[in-house]
Amino acid sequence: MSCIVNFAPSGMIPTKEMTPHVPVSVGEIVEDVLEAADVGITMVHLHARNPGNGQPTSKASVYAEIIGGVRKYNKDLVICVSLSGRTINEFERRAEPLTLDGDLKPDMGSLTLSSVNFNRQASINPPDTIRALVCEMNARNIMPELEAFDVGMINYAKYLWKKELLKPPHYFNLILGNIACAQSDLLHAGIMIRDLPPDSFWSLGGIGGFQLAMNSVAIAIGGGVRVGLEDNIWFDSARKKLAKNSELVRRIHRIIETNEREVMKPEELRRLLKMESGHGSYGRMNRGD
Image (tube, rainbow, N blue to C red; front, top):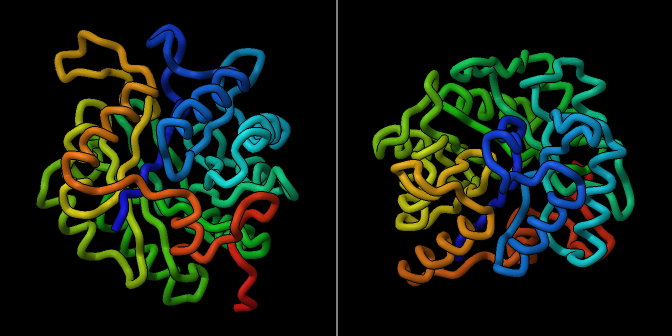
């Protein structure tokens, strides 16, 4: 199978003080996404920033500007909006990007499957909030992008699937290397992949210096990748060169080509995940289930 390239350009943590290359403004994010799409990506995992101070925001109006800017030039790229609980806890605020519709409707919304401790901060995801976000996405035919940092989160996804809240096919981001979660080694990655529910597609991501290793493993064994400055701002393990998003995407292309694979096109992922075709129709197909 061709390789899913899930592009995560900015995240919530990198700032201009950390690296001048992180896109923060609407224009910068749109520019980086379109540049990456020209190189070749399958989907994008978007975080919005407050135009005034560069801090994370869940405002639908800011997401609308980003999505509109991307779709003005690229109408089939699969777009996922962040519903993170890292800085915002209230369900209504977290779910606000899901209210966008028409040409601004996101195809997917991120869903972290449990609370997570990062090295200096927690992402709070209580069971009732997770279920509420799933129900909101189901009602709007928006597909969850399932984020799992350890095996327990996959087990919770299977619980939601058995409760018929998560509907197959599933798409998982498996993020390894966080201090309090699964580590970036073959055993941890293998167990997480083994435990995925049936009819699941997946990408491996790595925190910081683990990004390249986890991306390389995923490509070698037939999976997808999550790549971008959200998870890693450095190009080299010695941390001497700050990366640009375009450099990270181009390096992934070289590894994919070396492994005799191809980058999955957005239309293929839409077909595999039973999503609308793009070009004016977005989100998950309404299957009546």
